[in-house]
Image 1 (spheres, rainbow, N blue to C red):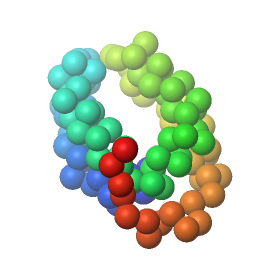
Image 2 (image 1 turned 180 degrees about the vertical axis):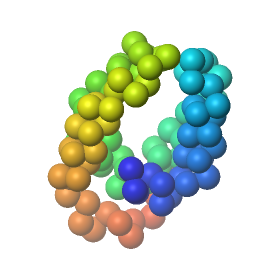
Image 3 (image 1 turned 30 degrees about the horizontal axis):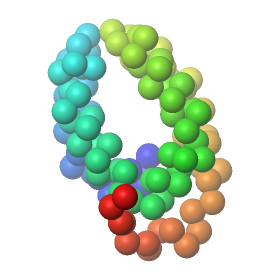
Image 4 (image 1 turned 90 degrees about the horizontal axis):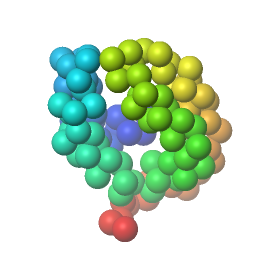
Length: 102
């Protein structure tokens, strides 16, 4: 998450503000901002490696959010598992890499 915030801070802040402003309907109201975050993060090699290595944990988190749209805090354990996975990903040598479009 620190990596995402480092390279996509503006997009993350806009998305977070939208989610906070629409607690019951953030999934619909903030979709366009979610797409912007996804586009930003999909080009950075460190984030791509974390997404690949922790795809299962991230998918479970997203599934939880879809199933608990009005109660996103229910998904906190999924966030913890995803972050724990991300901490174990070997990113040596990727930190200074220049993002390349896929």
